[in-house]
Length: 274
Image 1 (cartoon, rainbow, N blue to C red):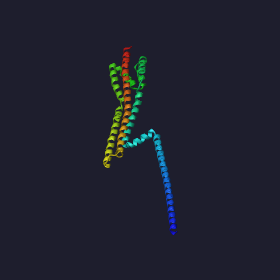
Image 2: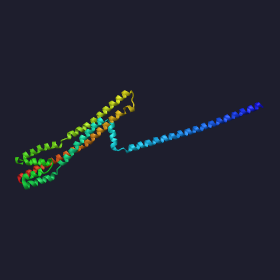
Image 3: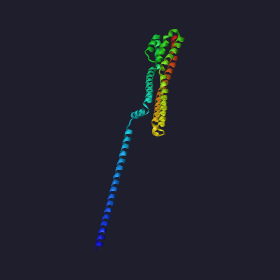
Image 4: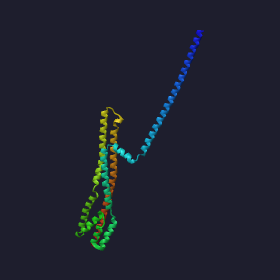
């Protein structure tokens, strides 16, 4: 009887222990599943936050204007070399604008001026023609005045005076073009110098790091490329202005030559009394 009671007691204890173990395993499984759910939710939240940050960065980048992007690239390209190239652009543009204004003011309606001079000669003589030329702006009117001033010395002297004074006026028209050409040549040269300096810095970084890595050479290569691009852009802009100025000067010179030929014919006709 005692053995039976002891056996039943032992069986009850074993059953109670097994039940507690099963319950504990279920609790652990539930806790594990809860933890996994929390971790999954945490990961999803982090991914959502990362996506939101990336979206905000893209929006900020998209909202950057041309001025802001240009400023950042200017600073990234080494302000020392970029500043020198910028000065070349500023001086070149200043000279170009001054020359454009001067040449536009020097442009004259030669046909209208010739008609006025011819009419003044017929009605008031050389002095009246001089007054017309004096009140008209431009190199063509100045050449006519110079020819009328030498009229008393003969047509040969008038022609020589016109040719000599025309050379002086051509020099005035071409004033400043040599400086613009200098800045056109100087801008890409400074850019290439920035390229060389940037590459030297990149190789120095490689030697210091002991290995070739994109992060090591990126800054030096960036300086090299940005200075070159900026120098070429400056040269292209100034070259456009330079070609326009040369074409404008050629047009004015052609008008001077054609009009002076007609002017000499008018003086010849006036002298002969036609």
